[in-house]
Amino acid sequence: MSNERPFDPAQMWREWFMTDAFSAEKRIHRMLRLLPHDPRCKFCHAPFKGLGSIIVRTVYGKTQSGLNPRFCNVCEDYAQKFPGGAEVEMSMLFADVRGSTNLSEQMSPLDFQRIINKFYVESTNAVIAEDGLVEKLAGDAIAAFWGAGFAGANYVRRTVKAAQHISEIMSRQHIPVGIGVHAGVAFFGAMGAADGLVDIAAIGDEVNLAARLASKAAAGEIIISEQALQKAGLNGSDLETRSLELKGIREPVPVRVIGEKKIVLN
Image (tube, rainbow, N blue to C red):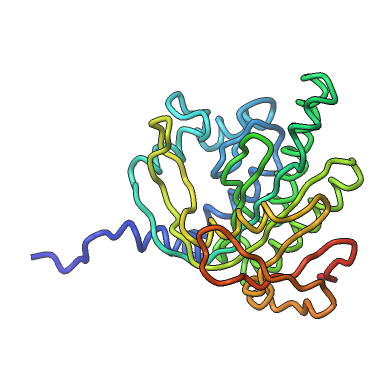
């Protein structure tokens, strides 16, 4: 009788997200995001067009999946082979364009599309620069999350850095964006999507809380939970304090507001 322990997909996802158990793959992940150009695999950032796509196809055998255009063929096979996930410590960032309906009514569809596309591109670049994973781009919003396995021990601090970077860029571009940042435990892994394809996502109460923080942020504001500030080891004493009543949450949630006054990050 074999003494080998049965394979545990949950443990695999936990180690992959929270530790450096797959350091070789993560080095590849960081390298691929430097290659031109978009669109890319949502998970490993392998480019699907241009010179970058030729490199990853030749060296790694990566091409855009014929079944799931979100992923390269390798990552899509991986998600199909190891469905499920695990509860993990993570940080989350939600950002969306404020008053997008009014904006769309004031300009042509093409001009509005250019604004949303600029928001997508700049926000995604800010997330990737801090080794975050972009969960989704939908409508006028972006969602992303971070774990220690990808972004290191300071992953919550890097989430705050990405949020401030997005806010600064959008301010210069005169695009009204509100952002929410939170940290906690969520379920992360591969699961079925609404369109029948496999997606890699984070779900749970803490993720919902992060989304609701973003919904309360005015243009140019970053609302960050006290929990995220503590996990990031940041001093928010100079920031505005609020207590928010959020749908589905019994107790008011204490938060800080990053506006014109930013947190100095090393």
